[in-house]
Length: 199
Image (cartoon, rainbow, N blue to C red; front, side, top):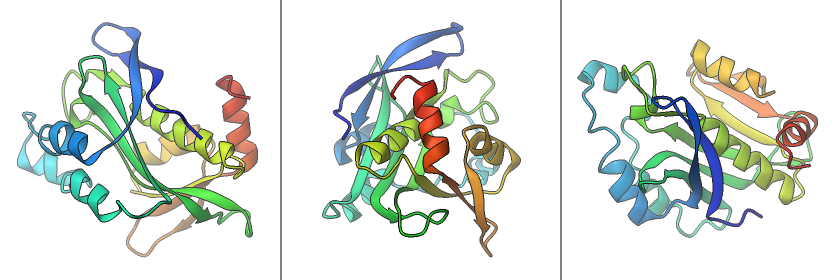
């Protein structure tokens, strides 16, 4: 089990250095004030905004809908100034698709703040947010005896596909709506955890 808040490192693109941040529990109050109320207040065109699949997500509402689901977890990366730089929502009661009969964590939402997306803004502030959040899910899976297995459904874009492949995820199937299901096996998860010094 992860004990939050926890110190993590993210990369400040503008300064060119790794900086301290916190991995925190994402509450409804934090989601309302630091995600729903601020993330999309950046100067991007309506077309660019609508091209982002998560632009319509209401994090406070998502958390409210899942408030009684004991298997659901929500975490966020919070920079020193208190801003939420990325967030994830995941279940700890899923079944592995690669290894039938084994448990897995299922990531239902994962997003970085739009101000950190280099394809949306000229000068993103931070990078490494998605990796921190994904690794936290892998660590949680491992701590629960699930071997580090993580499964998720993602958009089919090349950038997204490369992001997951680079971290050891395999395509398990392509859905009729164009989304792709990826899974990180226990072996690949443990290799990643060893590289990061957790095992």
